[in-house]
Image (cartoon, rainbow, N blue to C red; front, side, top):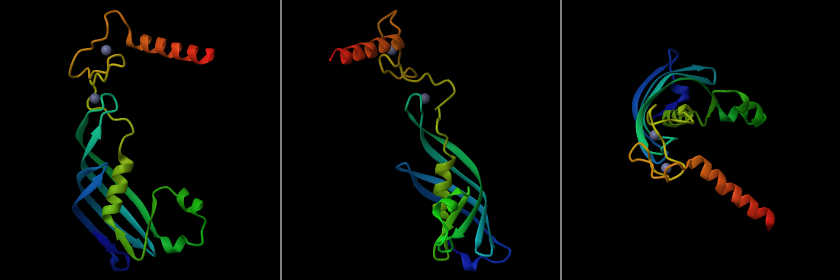
Length: 170
Ligand SMILES: [Zn+2]
Ligand SMILES: [Zn+2]
């Protein structure tokens, strides 16, 4: 939803809405529960965002969905006001965003904050066995078919060594 900043009442505005956001090519249902306050031209947004997100396991690469939730504590300033300031100075302020033409878009806030809250490394489960570096099989689903007694990590190292030797000779 779009909020007209000039129309935010003195006591603030409560927003509780279900939104559908497109994140990483996935339609993501999310819930935004925030309180919006205005101080001069600054808008303070506090509350919570939660969503069921499609994530990819960084160990076995499988996709799975997980409920994520993040607290919000943000300040928004009119982009027109920083026109004279250096952009470096403005972006240095953490958790400061900008709104344009008296309009604050809560869908944009929700999408930005969800992406920021996403963990860099995520596992489908603590017990995920991952993919064998030797044969490439998903060890959660099927067994390793590497030749017996051959350490896949070692064989990879040997291949690499051969490659570099060849390179030196050339
Ligand atoms: Zn996994
Ligand atoms: Zn294997």
